[in-house]
Length: 429
DNA sequence: TGGAGATGCGCG
DNA sequence: AAAGCGCGCATCTCCA
Image (cartoon, rainbow, N blue to C red):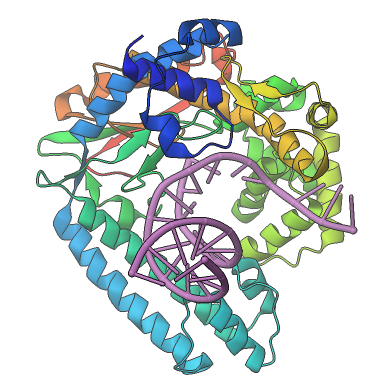
């Protein structure tokens, strides 16, 4: 086995183990029978596809993603101005000596105003309702944005493009990670995303799986109410909202739908009533008490009883010492922390989350291998971005959708999976 | 001085 | 009684 393949074998076999990243990453251990170990673990197929994927990812990195440097520079100036302005306001309210980037100093300064907090994170600051706390949050957001924009600017190569380091095995579940810079956490707003562009005479073809984790979870749990909704093209988030409020799905407002979306994803992965209440309060300004959140949670699992059973099974496995691993539908393995003690919660969430998130990652990778000869420029978990000459865009869109749906072949019924595709000269579009 | 850990927050 | 998951990155704080 070649050195690169050994490294992939090591990483596939060790997924989920807490390891010092570098050693496992870079040094191929030639002394072991890797093929044998892969076979033994039932991971040959997983490994083989990582081997196929590696050159596709290398080509994607080499190609890079186009950047509109002028636009980015303009945005950088604005962001920097906002950052300074926001910091000035914080210092006006909390004193010139208070560094808004220091949680410790912020906590102390707020305490002097009579606001005692355990944490100065977003939840705590929003909940406080304090004007100075709100300024701190504005300052942090402005700081973050300025930092990120600056980092993108510094990452642009001589060719005017960003060549980020995508790592197909950078996560415990089998998703990609991305670094230097991380193109998987670029701000969602149009001003930010539109700085990432197609070259002259080209367009970006952007395709993403729609509500894919929810669809896969519904399939894994055999949750018929959800599956029926997906099959009939119903709006799943509106459906959940309807189940929780007793309203008609058609009469659900946009805000309620957004909350239901958060409910769907949150409760799916074990969010507590308290967590739900906090989320509703900070993200939607809701007066959501924990009691009411508990009621939502209860109604959610009554509406989707198979999800409840699926969680129950996961809880059992989490406590079962014989259960040492969890697999995606493709067969990818993630080691679990040993049971007993505090880590049982981590075992539970890994047991629930990995088959969903990891299977989606597997499908995306399958699609990428199928698109090996296509000009991929980026990927963000459930999205692929390609850069093609304008006249090829329509055909490529069709091809990408087919490849992404086919990525689930043998894993999840393909008619359960939908892909949205669009094209534009810039990201977002 | 510099490394480890904590804190906080951007994305899917 | 209480816990959404998965990342990367910048900054601050503490300690050797």
